[in-house]
Length: 220
Ligand code: AP5
Image (cartoon, rainbow, N blue to C red; front, side, top):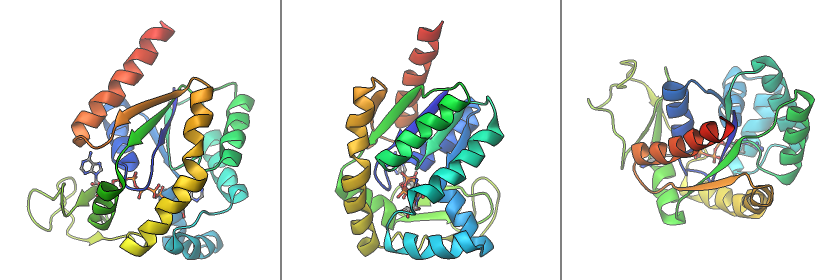
């Protein structure tokens, strides 16, 4: 199975991808995480990406396709979930070709639908464990013991530099201009499924699992 999670910033793509890794054994391919790793390593890519990400703009397609191509080659036949890729029609076309070359194809594209006001509240309240990457939120998902990660016991957390209200506005504009048209693109290919991303994480995960189970059953 090869799944895309599609939705605006803060829709819950990363949260759901991590649940699918834990509960269904998927490999998560998050281009945002890959770029943030490059930033913390201080590589040439990281330096270039940081400037672009801090403004809420997109890293050029050729760079992103190169990064994802390498990852897809490495994971072989494993089932995977794409979180943050593709974001443009150019990336979507390149992905199809990458999969075709490996005799694979997309199984489903799952859209997470969330209103803009809630997206802003989610993104501006987000913080992440520096050790295990668990994602929390001031408004919705706080650690059980204040200041201590539920999963690894770490006490350090970070907030993303692109999670300010101002940058978020630009991220949403760019999403609507360049990424939202992919919904129609995948609908026309019969691959698009939509879930209500405004429900609780567990409820969203149930809806996604229902889609995946139906796909598996249809394959026989
Ligand atoms: P990326 O990291 O992919 O950011 P994004 O797409 O903007 O998405 P987010 O990570 O902000 O949100 P999410 O949907 O994963 O939500 P999350 O689960 O964290 O990309 C960052 C940047 O990198 C881009 O702006 C771009 O510059 C560059 N980039 C990356 N890929 C690229 C590409 N392919 N091409 C070009 N450039 C690229 O949840 C958000 C918050 O809400 C969390 O606090 C969480 O706890 C909370 N939450 C989640 N679900 C729920 C729920 N159901 N109920 C209550 N709270 C919830």
